[in-house]
Image 1: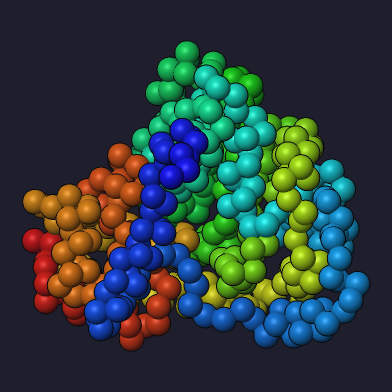
Image 2: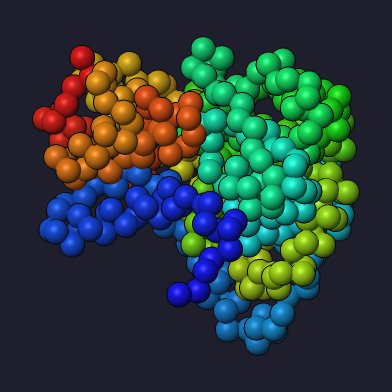
Length: 391
């Protein structure tokens, strides 16, 4: 038997791979599973992007290796998008780096900057890749608690000075997965000041940037004056344009950080299929873009209201998520988060995600992904009500 590397031995099974395995088991048993566990949009990629792919896929000039740093036209489209949506001016050549999905860049930024003994400051609860990247690179995550009392924002004043001195990276994510929290400019100003004081690179995961509710405006950390020197922002077309399977994203911001990340990437991958990059141009520049985003935001807003209203009728003090397409809610007394979601799956066929899977401070909560239609969401709430009530 081949012996895996120690770094792999220490890895847990990836949370969402494990959820997918359990779903397959239930489906094989004939259970009608309602999948509210994984944040994979159920509505299709827009027609204007599909049509662009139909034309680009057949062009022989798209079938060879792409430029290592990505197509100029895609980088320009990203820069134009930031100028229009965030009033942020980017140099497409030096301040935009295409990624094979933002998850790839989020993992590889740790390999680019973390040495053994270094720390990454990681939100807890948070997307597991932030901490896993640090561990694989030989460093360690230092977990910053996100609590309801502080609106799921980390407290930088509670990070010990010796920890800040060892840290290289600071990960942030707003709108937030899993809590649905949002951050305002004052918080980002505080984060940039903390990074400057401690010589940190801020890595802001903005995958859900367009999915904000209640009249909120999408916000980029790069809107903060001076952020471009100490921060990069990861973004993706996955959630904004229903393109999760296309694997197209990008990082923008600090010239120095992107040069290092790009140097790492060009040694281990060959970039995005050129046809997909040109579809990315279409997504970011097509005249139908804004109306599509507005309709998508409206769809998730309606679904959000259905779930919150339904849980509240069952006694839940459900949190009114202000961003992303998740509901973060407490588990009933007497259950761990894993015990609760297991009961739901076994008794109702409804799949939700245990909060503990996002970190120690996620214990006591579960996450609902709003990625099924309204009728299925209502059915899921009805099934949950027949199995358990909060109080």
